[in-house]
Length: 147
Image (cartoon, rainbow, N blue to C red):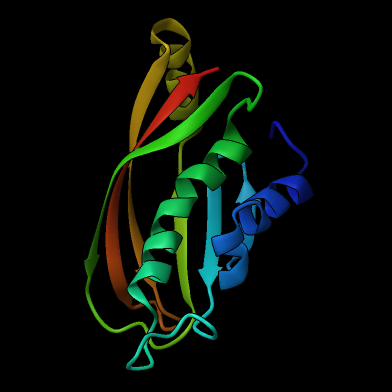
């Protein structure tokens, strides 16, 4: 990992004020793998389920968390180019998401970004409740860029 895990946790949970207010927690931060949890408490909508914006945040943030755990932050930075979220069922409790990038994919992205100044990757994720039921599915297009 290019940063100490506690610094990655702090950046993931606290750097963006909106995310800090949501009380999102980074449960696992490893090179190539992250698991994040959005609590229902404080993030409810008008009918008591999780607010769509909180679910969108949970779907979008893994790209940045994976960046922090897997890439050299001195040489690269990430951006989101596109994000789609499909709601499957009401989220009536805490929601988790896991995201993974294999080491060969991380290496390929770094080489491509070094050669071309940028490299794109897609994360297809499932947001799940405590019972493991899918409450939403996301497809995010991210770009790794050289500094």
